[in-house]
Image (cartoon, rainbow, N blue to C red; front, side, top):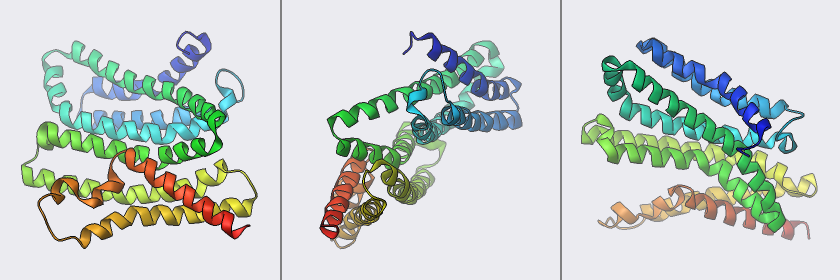
Length: 283
């Protein structure tokens, strides 16, 4: 892929629509310019590839159609969360370095922005290719991993990014405030995961499954119900356990929130259960 000239041309055009905003804001280097530039970089990084992939009808990668656009949305949002944490940690240091030596730090900032954009675009091509190859090993595996991707990528990145920030420098806050903030983040992530899960079962799963519309709707409905049950059952168990010191590290409520791993077993069991119930209903 890297040696393909058509891919390189697409990559350069996409980067031209994404990079100038963030880099320009950093060069102007006022608070307003950096804020607007960063938001524009994130927004264009989301929209430019998404719209290109969605409406591309010929050229390199067009055989994957809108699949790349669907892959790009959660991927870039996950990257935004990671960048947010990195900027939070290192932007004050970068600002100080810029005032002392603007050229090297500007070049480093440009490289960071470029690496994120290039990584996202390359994954936009690699993941659909991998997704199609999974169909050769069975449609069930493809549907399962696709559901885990769409429901769990953003929450997983959010948890790992903020945990990393917390343990790296305490978020540059006092311990109590940092812990409280982390709990608030996890609360938002939990409810965000529920929304993403319901969207995954309502949209992705319906489109990914084969069969009549009635069967697909039934599978989606029961899969979503089972997924919610699996998400909440460990928390209910945790509430009824006697308080003990081991729960700080091994509480059952952590099981549905373990980044990426929890999404595999949550979606796998939920889809399996949804299919079994559907088979029983339509037998």
